[in-house]
Length: 362
Image (cartoon, rainbow, N blue to C red; front, side, top):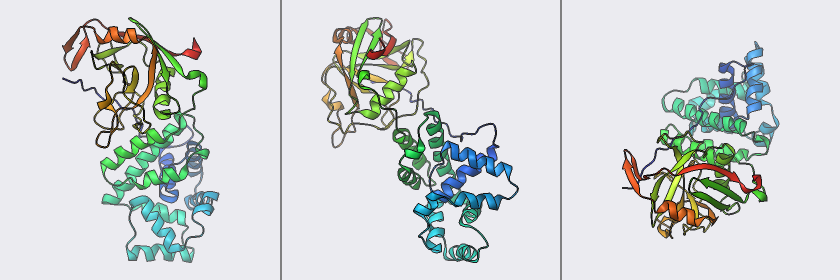
């Protein structure tokens, strides 16, 4: 029986807030970024506008300031009033407004009774049923994106903002659209580029050392993910929990007690690079969901070409190869195994990962 492991995904769904701002104002700031600009707010922007909302007794004035930006001028200033109002509905609800609603808001805009930003808030506050779900789902995804930008110290000013708008535009009232978007957030957020000296890693086990060369150019997302776990010393004291001679050895998810270790968010499946699951190549383990790989990996004991991506098979993402230590892999693969609970093909004698370090750090 093939072992099925639990995917433990840590995705924060609450927006970033410093102690200086109320959560209500932080939520409003993110809502306005989604409703007015159609994107997630950057951490500094969310916190700045939350401070403005908290510190002013004139909400309309702050909303007006929020709406007057270079981003608005570059993307929306040339649109007609009808196009602007329609754009708000599309960004929040993925639909056009009804004729009466369109005429009402266009009239307020043309008469100067309201700014486009205050209209955006009014529309958002009045959302009901599927519209309310759609907007709430978009804000959930936006919060996750903003949190990742802050936690990974990524310069959002240089990011592909149009790509984030496209991402949010695909989020609807359905839960499945949120799941898909959250996975895309995990893949979209850029990772630091590894240096050339980080091409190899040493994986020390209680059976010996395995040296692995990483394929930075062919599998940048997967390699960056693996390096993030190495930097966090995640793999230390975990085990190879599934070993099958003539197939592969799998580890990187459980400690010796069988307890799963909490992981980072899953990454996008990266199999469009002509890399193959041949003997000695290392690949990411995953569930039946293509974009679900987190920390677990496996080393191919033999050529397993059926694990490669084909027209009908998503495949498993290769990201490196063993350059020294295949004898250690052979020894582990040929160990006697037992079944305990949900673990099948568990080595009877534990195979522990003592450390995984960059060759450049040794």
